[in-house]
Image 1 (tube, one colour):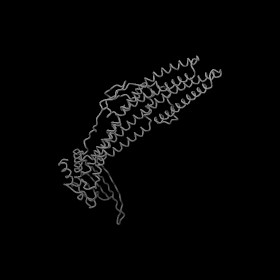
Image 2: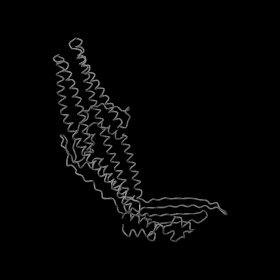
Image 3: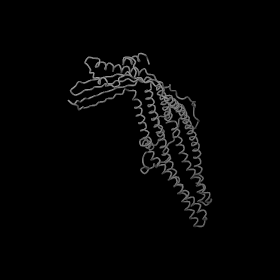
Image 4: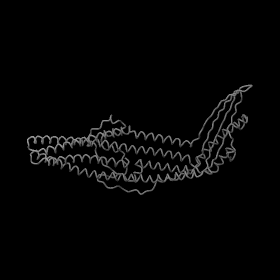
Length: 494
């Protein structure tokens, strides 16, 4: 701080002063019985001193320094690219279209809109942001002057006459932020607001991805239920034929019992799929913020969702694309500002004040007094409290720096894991399509031969089971492809 600013502050009270040189009470002048005389210094100096007080406060604030360390993003080695996966391209910018809109389903778009509007976790996160913003207002309050007013009235009953008096007063005080303590505290609170906003964005990404997965899972279960119902119908038809042949004596009771077991297995599989569909729909309803009893599960097929291509952005873009990484960095910035607050606590603090009091009695003259003061408070011995606080916030800043690097590494891992799952799902999808085709051909041939009496029931039963498993696996693999797409876009922060 420059010398002329110190001289300006000292001039407010006629030179350097100590705490013992100030009046003990703003009403001391009134208690001494003094009264203002028009044209004297008593009624002219307060306005001049008040202007000088404000001017000095502004000048001191503008010249204040900050003791917070210069922020640098934690250094770490960033990969130059991702693993190669067929069908996955490369882009230089983060996609601007939300991932669920790329799936091409109007019903899904409406469902996501409902989830974003009604999800209770998102609503709670919004209130956490409001709390952080309120704390930021509190943290910024010391940057401004504080003003207060007081008043009192009294009546004294005393011979030979009663007296009534009224007093009023006002005070303005301002702490000059010489070392940036208040500004860093306000910055720290602002960064915490940013962190809470990024946390909500991360939660928003979780909600939309979970809603998309639940929706896709219900659609896949719809398809699997149709397949199970079709296979159950075929098994019951075969059972009817076998029972007719058993009545004719062309087959034994063994074949009848075996087919009845097969029919029961198909019915059990159908019941299990129905249960899974109901529980998934209940989870989706809760995610949407509505009671499961009031929610009707979608009846569409998985084919209504198209699997779009994926374009990967460079690994470095994740630092600003993923809200969880940005939240971690905002927390690190807040801790960095807290170090500035802890450092400033070692240095003196300067407070400027203006107190005005007016006293009047009914039937008597009014009296007014004004006091302009400045106080300087410097810590001398605190028993290690200030040092301990600085060590604490410094260690906290280092911890958050490590957590930031860990968050970045976890983000890279999530992308690579999603790529591995997508590659596996794509490879399995190619094989499953071929398996379904061959299984269908085998079943058609076996059914024709069984009807002609060329093969026994066991051959037909085996091809029937193979076709059911192949179709069911194909739907599950298609679902895995959609899940991998959603997980990859979530890992990319888009």
